[in-house]
Every structure is written in structure tokens, then in C-alpha cells.
Image (cartoon, rainbow, N blue to C red):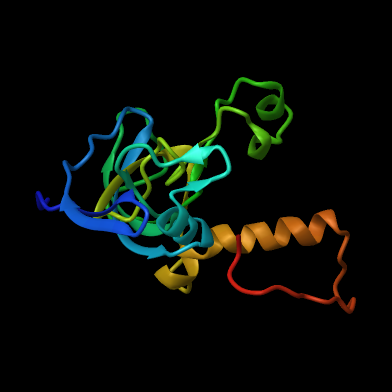
Length: 181
């Protein structure tokens, strides 16, 4: 495995630098991912142009990116169902798994969520990242890496449609002034 882990690191407003970082070591429940595709989200742009989103403030250098597809480069000792070489899409948030939201299947509401590229958690705009295996999903051969990286923003749209009770065949209005935020 190469020792190169070029990463896009945000130092402050309008200050992104490419720098080498250590290749992270996966824990027993994690995968080491060789990243091949990362989408640029509105949140990445907002951190770059404003240095913060609400109470999440970039106070120290942070790797950007969270819409991610890559190839498994290492498998933790307790991980089942993944092999080196598998292509995976990453769900960018890892919840605590112990709060009431997590226990009732609404882990997206977990107040202790650790989300890629949300201070102080580093993102995935790097050659290598580690991620909990149970938040990695195998990508079928008929899905491109670009499509797989965009599964996270697609899931946001699907969730919104479900909450709005949108049904197949309904006419709807989609409006907005730009990228997902």
C-alpha cells in the first residue's frame, strides 16, 4: 500500500491546502478505505467560505468531504462481510448507538453523531480514511463510483419525500437557489 495520503485540509476561510497526512489505522470494527470519489457538498463550500455552520466552527485544520465512495484497503479484525478490494459507499455519520434515538432506529437524530467534515471530525477528501464497517455499503458493479458517492445527498431527498408523503405520480414543485444545504 502506498504511503501517500494527500488530503484537502481547511485551515480557515478561503484557505484550503493540500497536504500529506498519515494513513489512518483501522480499529477492529472499521475498514480502511482507499477513497476514489468525493462529492463537494454545500456544507464543504460553506465551511470554506464562512468557516462555520451554526455552532460548528472550524477552530483547527480539518479535512473536508463526506460524500464518499472508495475501495476497501484494510479490514478490522472483528469485521465480517467485507474484503480488500470491495467498492463501498460511506454513510458519513456514525451515531453513539446508545441514546434513545439510536435505540429506536432514529439514529440520524443522535445528539452525539460523529459526522465527516463537521468540526472537530475530519472528512473524507483524502486518499485514505477509516470508517466503522456498519456504516459502509457494498456498491454493485452497475453503479459508478460517482453515483455511489452521491447516495448520501440522494438519501436526504428520499427522506424529505417520505416525510412529505410524496407518492409516485404526484405533481410536486421543487424549488431552490442552488446546491443542497
